[in-house]
Amino acid sequence: MEVAFNEFGPTMNDAGFHLPTSESTTTDRPRIEPIRDIKNHQHDVPTDAETLKAGDGESFFAPPKADFLAVYAAGRTDGLMGVNSNVGHFGRFDFQRDGDTFIDAYSNASNYAVGVYMAGAGYTWHETFLIANTFAHIMSSNAGSRTQQAWWARGWNDATNKTGPFSSSKTDD
Image 1 (cartoon, rainbow, N blue to C red):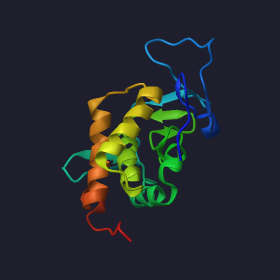
Image 2 (spheres, rainbow, N blue to C red):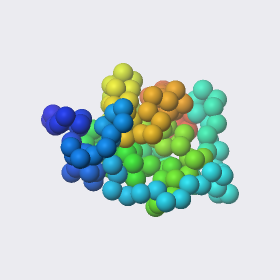
Image 3 (cartoon, rainbow, N blue to C red):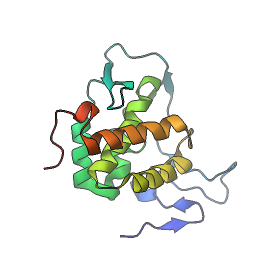
């Protein structure tokens, strides 16, 4: 299957996004606007946050509902066509967004989930980086962030090498 592009990048209107029009105001790059808006920004760590440790020893906060084995399984089942609905903005495993609230403490968990999902879908690290970086460049306010990329890599590495939250799990059935 081939991804369709227009002059603004990949066409994602079937996935719930408005494509910019010629009347849109853009700065240095075209943006695809999410249908939902973030109205609240939670800067503190939620009281029910769980602390998890990636395979390289880095700790991160995740909500109690975070199930990275389910993220991996969704990648295996849904592949590239399910990236946006699973780990895209407001996706099933976008832990940093809850309704109209953005939760800073869960940003690393969301980026970790991107790497886990892509490993589950069978993508190499290079393919994961290219796909995630393209999405981030179009959609993310922190595109190109080394932190964002590092958490994609941690998720991909842990799922691929069965380290971190995957150390006692079976992900290859």
